[in-house]
Length: 199
Image 1 (cartoon, rainbow, N blue to C red):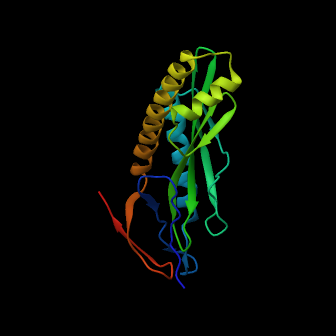
Image 2: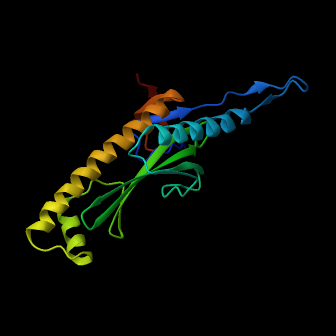
């Protein structure tokens, strides 16, 4: 029975990185390139720290975190989380994107991300925010009333969805510099998956 090599949950495509085996000079045996994986972690961490310093709308970069989509067959390493913060009158909104290196089932890794929003203590993960959800949240947790709730909810949704688009674009631009872009062209009933490079 086959299994897909990559488990990519949210990224727009599979950002795949392989670490080719090489011949050990002393023993002549083929060994895996563990240094390549360590270099990838260091390079991506450095890139996201640099992004944090370049963009004024990013409030914080924190190394490590939790991969909510990790599976036993696809262990992961969390590079870190970028946080974007905004305030709409009395409503606090936090947007986060968490960057992940997830091991392939057979070899290599893929790069993925997850997005979450915190609006007055309510968390929304990996989804677009709808005004109705936010209105109920604002009504319960703030002193806003009537029409002001609808206006504020729309402003928050617009900011969240725009911020998500920007966060994903920033992260995937960096990912594309360190990986090959793949897409699934066939997946069989036994789990075997065929990938193809995309430009």
